[in-house]
Image 1 (cartoon, rainbow, N blue to C red):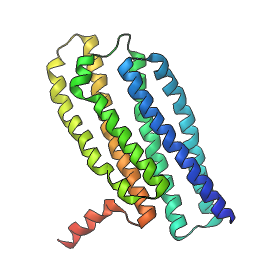
Image 2 (cartoon, helix red, strand yellow):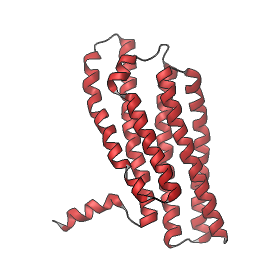
Image 3 (cartoon, rainbow, N blue to C red):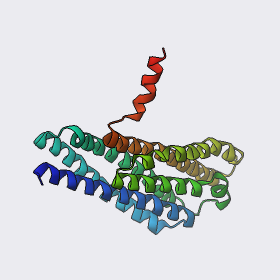
Image 4 (tube, one colour):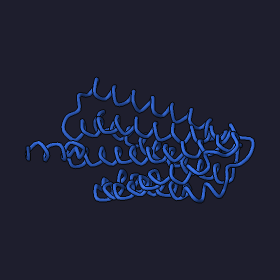
Amino acid sequence: MTHLDHEIKRLKSNMLKMLLNVESQVEKTKKALIEFDKDLATEIRETEKRINGIELQIDSDCENIIALYSPVAVDLRFVLSIYKMNSDLERIADNVDAIASYILKQDQEFSKEIISQIGIVEMFNVCLNMLENIIEAYENEDTNLARKVYAMDKKLNKFDDEAIGILTPHFHDEPENLKKHLYILSAVRKLERNGDLIKNVAEEIIFYVEALVLKHKGKRKRSENT
């Protein structure tokens, strides 16, 4: 095994660690919100610091591999993809960290009725299913599995589109309740954004496996038709 092979193997392992940590953060945030568990919310915020450390290490490893070993072809695609995936995963962790902060800012739990109407538990479950697919796709270099997250993301978009209509009648509630509703609305937006970020990760997996950048594919087709 060459030095480059060794560094690529280590990078792949660290990225799997990042993926699993982010998945765990999403799962814990779902539980903390449902149960209004401030201790768990505090743990989530502390774990975010460790995730930031993993992100910095992966970024540094990517830069060092490019600078020291000048990878080409599939190795270069892999390193570039990992660099982009790393940023998206850190942002996913940031979003659920923000939701944990909402829990810590409240003295009383969020309205279970509002949570149920909004479907925020279902949104968490969709995000977790997307991440499970991504982790398996990453480990097995399975682009078909990676592509399945696109349909799941449409479900998150639907929940987000409907959220404001569900909450509008409650915007005249007492200020303290209104603040809680706005936190829930913000949580919905962050989960919808996480769906977009997970799609980005899927695109990078597809890119390094198939040398295909999906986000430019549609642009090429449109330009060919003009």
